[in-house]
Length: 417
Image 1 (tube, rainbow, N blue to C red):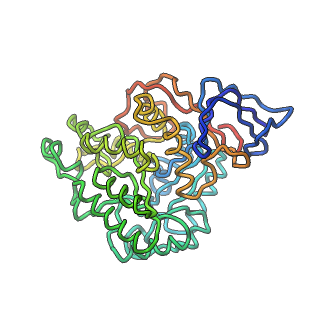
Image 2 (image 1 turned 90 degrees about the vertical axis):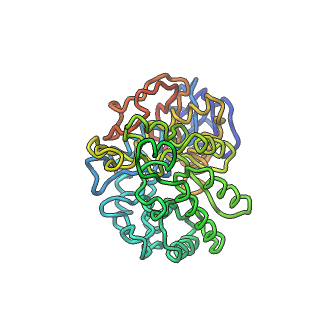
Image 3 (image 1 turned 120 degrees about the vertical axis):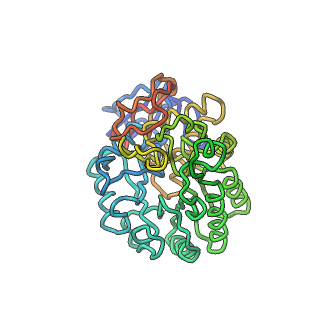
């Protein structure tokens, strides 16, 4: 349990640190001095040494969707992607709206002994948008936020009660921002490409109207609002104004909304069918700029594995979503390499800020903190090849991209994985 990580580039946004140096681990925690004889020496020359990455939005599919993913395969994919902790969404079958399932997720991850799980149960029973789950009991069982992800919580009074209750428990409500009466069966962004394809459009207004409503409720209640997978200029502007006025509003963006636009859909591939949909380039550029300036706090993959059969049936019948756990680091490194993002901001968005928003251990290399860390080789050339992934599914339009850089190992509680 003594480790000396030697000669890496230490990037720790929690301390504003980006410098060469050594890192020490003893008995599962970071320490500020060499732990002594018997230490395992890890040569980190040429590597980034960063706080363990945290993915605040994943779909592990278990229970009910084990043909797409299990907790075991999902956590293996997370570890391979550099993540020491993940927050699984509740849209399983049945939905995670109870203490038993929440505790099972935590225990299952502990039994597997690698990447940690911090569950995000549903806001409402069965994700039906009516009756609140027993939030206090779920927080005691390990919940760190609540979300009806996959469905926007449309009822004003239910959302208001959720924000009030969650505020009393010091956890955020993570909202899937979509008024379904406005998206009205849309399967791609409502615009030039949807008209070219002759498909029903999912307008930006469906996201923006809910973000606007939720910010107003956050102001009224003092509750903490987290906007999941933000994707439009208007929603970003609303978050920016809310933050400027001091409201407790945070937001996340996916790697695919930072790199892809709806123009990709013209070739007919349903691997790029996601919710919220890919938008035109102006929205993608707004997402990049907002991530760089901190308006968007974090990057979360919305890892959503689907089988090839799930993606059949054209744009109308195919499932929404793409995989992301084993792709996120190289996609964010591309932004760093292009000069669109600093290395420190990338790591803050993938580690320090998620830890802060959801009240998690980790997100820092500070002495005394749990020894969760990620080693990244920023220059390692490779091709995105889903056939070599640990996740069960291959639904990604990034397949075949030639990239430089990836996570090479993680430590969780001082143990290497």
